[in-house]
Length: 333
Image (cartoon, rainbow, N blue to C red; front, side):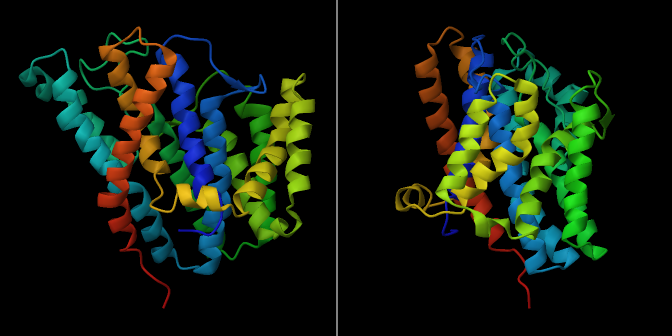
């Protein structure tokens, strides 16, 4: 495991997504970060910031297209495939309101398998149809094709020998498109079942993380810098539009400053595995299932039940699927 706090931060990011979704599933007012951003998107932005930093570093350490994509695929797909198969062949048959014959005869049942290819579908026939968030089996999967598209862009920039200024240009373009289009447009632009707006909204945090790595800005990191970033975000709370824009720099600064430091307690928490991805992909269906059986459950009990069930699935995913798959990653000769 890495000798820093990044694994712990990813765990926090995945847990924030679980926490944020809980309010939606129980029809409660959403918890927000500084009255600006719901907790779920905050967790997602933390993920993309860390990903931009680490994925760019991964390419620079071994700029080989096949090995790079093989590593990315081994990280994303084995656990995702198992999660999708469990959803279609275990969760669906157990919870669908249809007969098993009707369920497996429905084209949407088999269409859900397209999630394996990052063509995102949320619907399984007859599953969660009476929940407060109806017919959504795993709403968290939308980020995966966005993230993978950014992996491809890192590879394309690398193949064409793009330097750090190209990475900075991409960060600037992404932020400008986000500011003047992606955040303003009420209409989704859908390509391959994904909202292109999110390539820029999430991509801005990704490319800023990449810029931090490319320009070696971590050499300026300090506890004081992290504190200043957090204080500035608090001071800007009254102006949410300005805070949203400033967060493209301030949030990655705080995240990476903390993430690249070392803490024995946080290292101890993550020493046995990186459970963040498992928490991320299993939380949504588990939360929907718990809400199905107990729609009036109290928030505290709901959070505890969902977190421990999700953590158990994430631990199984890491030890039996993700970690063995990662051992197959090609190494630089």
